[in-house]
Amino acid sequence: MTSRKEPWALVHARIDHIPFKRYEQLLNMADVVPRVMEGVASDDVCAGYCMGKMRADDYPRHPEKLVKSAGVLDLVQTDVMGPIQTRTTGGCIFGVTFIDDYSRHVTVFFMKAKSEVLSKFRIYKAAMEKATGTTIKRLRSDNGGEYTDKLFKAYLNLNGIKHEKTVPHTPQQNGLAERMNRSLVEMARCMLYHEGIHKKWRVESANTAAWIINRIPNSVNIKTPYEIVNKANPQLKNL
View 1 (cartoon, rainbow, N blue to C red):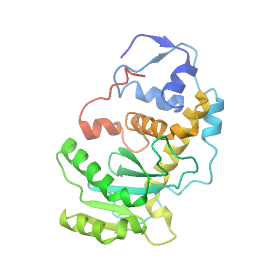
View 2: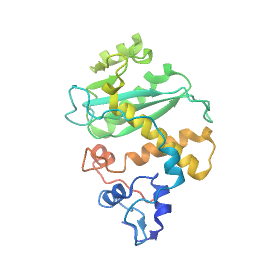
View 3: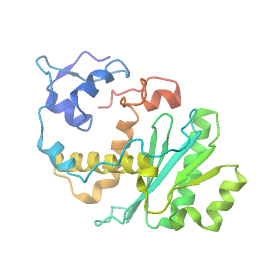
View 4: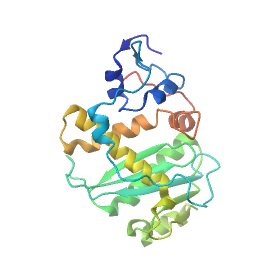
């Protein structure tokens, strides 16, 4: 743990505006966490946080009577975001997330077309299975064409992955992916607004948000997603 102490406003921005209570939990879960000066007991609401958190009603957290995950990569949830109004610097207008249900570890990719979902899933599968030493058992998604075409079905069948498709018009059945996408959008918006950066840089801000989410505690596990997947404490020295 680092000994330097900085104003809460600065640390708050570096860790993407997470609540102070979550920051306190992080002190015991990660290495080289920036320390704050004395006298902080709760959040001071900043403009970036307010702008980033403007959103619609939440998706219920546990509405679905679906089989939960038993371990890492037992269940991966996925969802597509977009189209995005402002193209990214690379010309992307869609994003896709893959979330390990057990650890809540998230990976986000950006795409020019939804047809790229399969290629992104291949990359995700290879990286996560190498990191964890286990294989993906189930994939949960909506019924979008990018998940139900012949090539995607064939790839899942070839690798023995069971495809769980949600009932049409019930996004709550894929609630984790829906909430994660919203969290990524909100956190990215917070960063862009706080620093006065153009929306075309949303890929970089969303990737940073995912990096941070994987290294902070959540309400489900007593460990960070990074530690569960990699079996090591995350390092935050670059913050």
